Amino acid sequence: MLQCIDAIKSKSDNIKIFLISSHTDTETLIQKVAHQTNVMAIYLLDHEERFASTLNHSITKLHDLYSDLDSLSIRLSQDIKSFIHYTPLSISTFDREKNENTIRDLNKANARFLWLQLLIDILIKTPYNDQEKDEMLEECRTHYKDNSTVLKSIKEFSQTYKSTEALKFYTTDSFLYRILNRALRTENIDILFICRFFLADICNQLKE
Image (cartoon, rainbow, N blue to C red; front, side):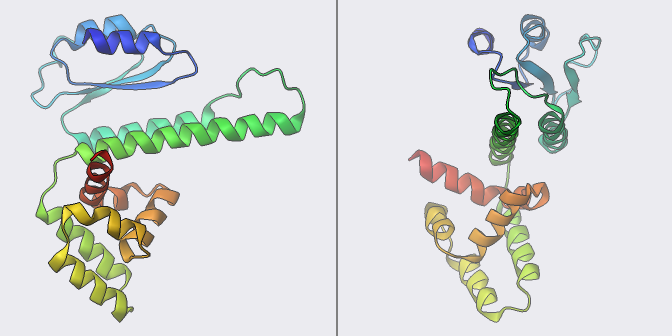
């Protein structure tokens, strides 16, 4: 926990932090970091409902307790989208309208990238099994129901796919590449959630 606190305090105010904690001493963690100006919100993942009776709910940055990752990720994505939309323009030495618009666009782009990184990180850490793979393939079949060539590729994928081949499927112009890229561009949380096992396989391959 001390490493977490030190890491938060070492970040500049330009780095905005949406903190998720499931630490047993969450009360201490909140007291130490809630006053930090770069901490935008604090979320508690409490599978066993250990914190409900002891937590100080008067802390404005505390955005409730969550018993599962699904509900937490939905709230987190909503909050980050609101942050992207309502974040004021940073103070700048530029005073021309063109430059101000450029900075505003850059701030929004950076915040959107941060939102996507956080969302993917949550998704790939969410437990999954073979049922999730079947659910993803069923979504793909529905999407490409009128394309016999793609349906054949989906069938082949379901029979031969290995987690060590995720990058091969993603870097080719496959049905997964097209569906996943569209979901990333449009920030479609439902599709990204369905594809989380494939996202996890990609990330694991990149780490190797």
